[in-house]
Length: 278
Image (cartoon, rainbow, N blue to C red; front, side, top):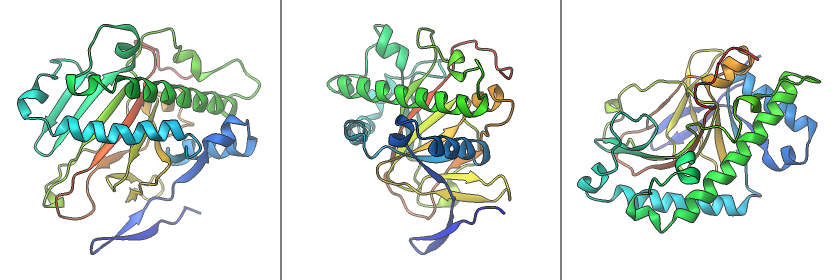
């Protein structure tokens, strides 16, 4: 029997809320078998779930600081934002348009190169480094737990495609919007994530997912102390389809402009990795 969406009222609109499972980071760290199986079931059915990180106080402090950093960054004059464009580079720098924008910072650049952060962010480089480091540890834990469920008593490991010593395009990416006076003006941006796992932190409605059992759309509720985790195309491919990369889109549930910020960690495999099933 398919899970049932609950209802929520936003403004004067009633919306369907996606029935996401909640996984405890603390229990996974303790090696709890029931929590590992819950993780596997969520990653293989809906491909979206909440990760309860409420016990990770330093990480949540970094997230809150990154919200402020994001707001400060996007309130700069446009000419300052345009300085951070990286032409023909999919994974670095500023991209933007009317009422929306993003800034992406590669983990490899922070750890291994001389690439400088934008001037307005340089004073908070420790926060950027800390968020990236903790996020990378979290997603590697999720990989290890998923591998145990996918291939019990086997030497197969998803980590083999995500070695820390190899270059990859994992990144911190912060967002503004989109937010428009008319919801109908938000263009269709339906997509799946191309990487392995995404951690999303936000405090407002902004993501809709396509429910695989009905092909209807439901909203993902923002929950304090929780990351919204997305399974990407890479894990779907490496698992032979046993993990599910769910189509989703960014929108707004009601008319009316509202500033919205989001902080994400895009975890990607090694560059040029083969995506044949393990």
